[in-house]
Length: 514
Image (cartoon, rainbow, N blue to C red; front, side, top):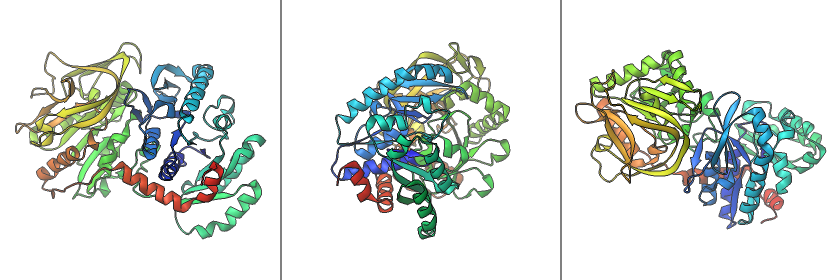
């Protein structure tokens, strides 16, 4: 089991790497994280919702995503409350104290899921959450040492050396653990290291002598690793490879994409395939002065669409988006796209009569004549869409495969939108003809403002490349063939790096394999 001295120490990627390495050895292996708090979720083939990180880890094992790999998912809707999802299905919205009362039931679901999944494989690779030394949370723990004890797992304690304080964090964590839990720790891993590892020798020896635990390896910083993030921590900090905040450093020879940094952004992984492209700037902005002159604006998904709409208004990004939309239609270049919650915000209003998010009726951006009401039933499904010709420049037979996660039901208004002079069109349908995207086209028939409920739509190479080249052609930039977005090759690069950095014989010995 990988546990960390903090959040964002790299546990998820190390879990994926070890899953990949064990799978290469011919072992049946599966990942497991008892409880995940994340807004980057994934929908399984049977319509269950789970953490995106465990879906990536499943892919590393050569398995389909399975909700048993992440039996409890918490999706924050505010600073004090979350939607609680157990074995892929929502069970309610809970504040912290209510969830603590619910924890015994959640733990039973965790144990059942673990036993069922473990019975089908040779090796389980577990991941913790945050830190096992959070003594204020220890009595409610179901994801760190309590899970390790239940599974009989040895623990590798991971520290992020790039952020500083790693050695103190390792020693301090060991001090705060109980004697029984300290004995369960097999060793330490330093992650995200830059430089000459030999310079660490004295420090490694000192910490090992004080704690009685060896170092199992020093994993280097992997730059530009294009794998979906577990949550939005790096995105919010502007640390995710391929993202930038400063409009002054934009390469003017590249497609410039602006993404509002919504406080409750969800499924920011929709942007991963775009940031993996060469000659594309993906910029996250929080203030009007960061706006610059983008070619494309993407309003991403949100776990609290009403609050994020209010935030756009408060920070004065609402008018920037409206102005950009007008320019797209009037000048016949540029593109404004809304995904899921972003689609809802492009409409005229968002109604939350059941208080699923913030409650009440909120005026949206008013760009597209669409109205959304949040319903109690949550739509969770894998979906294949057929885009309108206006989105793909005449390319035929393009199918977009992704997933839906939304409470919102969106309909076209009976009266035109006050800011719209062109008619609204259905631009995306699933294979049964159900509309999943709406938008407006310029006079030449090119979609300029549109939104969809389909997550993952940019992962289809031919679609992504045509969108980017549409922008390049109208801006006088060189048309490019684009890069394939291949998850498998990135997982292999991760696994190869980790294999050369960790003491694999020692880890195999701990697992009883070799």
